[in-house]
Image (cartoon, rainbow, N blue to C red; front, side):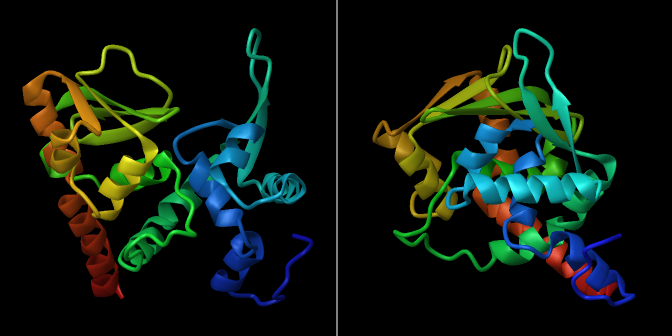
Length: 232
């Protein structure tokens, strides 16, 4: 492979040859739930320039991590998605994300936030034991952003956009969602003052709360770190 930076015959060095540049792993993060347009990636990566994103996408495509596809009419737009090798990379990132999650702390005023970033953490570290035996869809409308989780027999899939026939729909604004995600407030406290609303089956809402409880999500992340430590 041309362009290696380290020239070391080592797995860690070879991985960093491909993903060690700034923004690269965050591009992979943005593609984890599925295909995204260039404009979607720009919005999900505040601070990156269009030229740099184009360069990173070309490099990842060259290295077989992502692929480009043309959507059929009427969409007729180009999208980027992870290849099988890219999905393997995304899976390998999970312990790293867990390690970073414990260092988030309180959100600083200068730090940007996107609603789907918290959704990715929820999907990655949800309580899959609580999800066993559940087959439901949960929709989140956060400001102008829509996403939903499809829970089926313990598996949890995150999808962008609105859902068909969700069992529960949570609606809030982005700042409230950021406060809930950071632990500054709770969903119940936000609901009590009308900043967050839940609509749908009350029993399904309770199942949603168990599966995606912030405390359980953080506990699952810590469990992944402990498991990785034990394996080492």
